[in-house]
Image 1 (cartoon, one colour):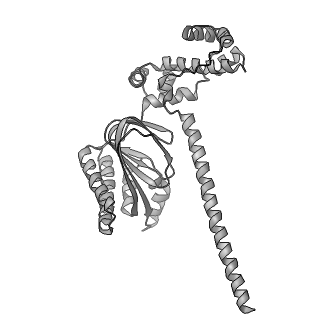
Image 2 (cartoon, helix red, strand yellow; image 1 turned 120 degrees about the vertical axis):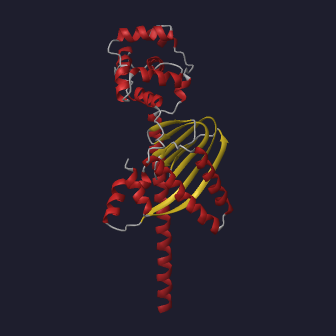
Image 3 (cartoon, helix red, strand yellow; image 1 turned 30 degrees about the vertical axis):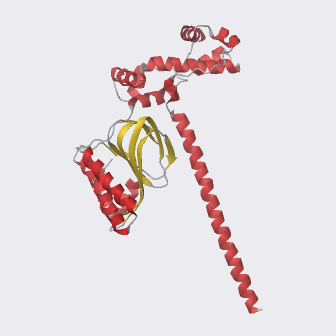
Length: 332
């Protein structure tokens, strides 16, 4: 990301703070598509954040710029405190260069992050901004705008001077996503590590630290859970289920299933254990589920906007018809 270009665009930006939310010590999960650009400032706690398809695990003060129309999903691992600041901004075109940069970078639609070197200063800045915002007075809201620009300056100053760093992506969650997306393929842990551009040893370390098991063990358990679901439905042959889960050999799949579950898949199918068995890791929001929710929410938002537009058009036509009728009555 070209931070210098973004700073130049912000220098020519007219911004308006639309809302500041302060959420303190909560365990409530949040899921939404943002109607405005926003800045999320996590003060304390432990949470998982998904921005579109990118996962983060946050346990310290961190700042996230979230672009307009982005999908945000927050899950709390323990009570957390954060600010969510919504704003509306427009770039003032002073010349063709600014217009070109705006079209190229679209700064208010970008997702990026910063772990500041001076978290206390950011915390105090947000406290001051929120107190002034709550007053509702014009004078204090003018001060809020000044403080907002100071926040933007601090973020980009740290990133351009390489003092603050972007928040690292949650590699463990990314590995989990990869396995969910490629469960029907035969792949090695080395291939998984290569997809994340890390070593297999580092992959094992971060995944085990997060989920208390190695990625290979997780993949095996997950495949067996999916296999049990298919066996309970009794719609496919064991060979088809094995191929669907990345096993080329039905015999090898049956051995792995018996070792993990305790009985062969053919016997399991006859007993049909209807009790769902899901590992706690599976409660983690998966990328497929997130994508589906994004599409649903965007479709609902599109329908809502269409209805609003139809209402406006209908109201306009009614007023126009009324005026026309009134004018004709007067003439007659």
